[in-house]
Image 1 (cartoon, helix red, strand yellow):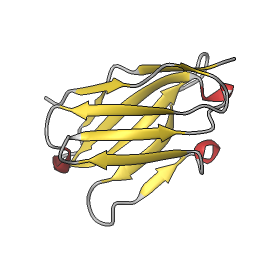
Image 2 (tube, rainbow, N blue to C red):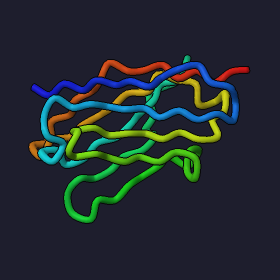
Image 3 (cartoon, rainbow, N blue to C red):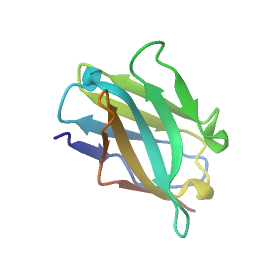
Image 4 (tube, rainbow, N blue to C red):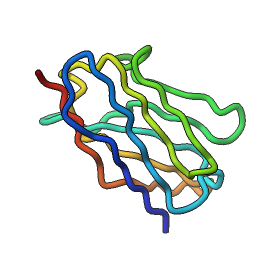
Length: 118
């Protein structure tokens, strides 16, 4: 059983930055990919950023965060990060970490709240 624990969510002013962290209970090298999703109030959960951990290690971002958010990993710490810059009120959401195993199982963290407001 994989456990994912997110941290780093906070209240931040527009234009500010946050760094989210997601610590996995096992080695992230056993995963085929890890990513971040978010659910804004009244909206469905959407993909924010995803990184494949096998092959070429490609990254994918939803259009609204391209150029502002960066996903990265630290395999020694079994952690995936989401650096969020130039935050806007529309980025307000609960952010969830996701991990996909090589056997196609999907695991989710509990979520961390990001609120962008002046």
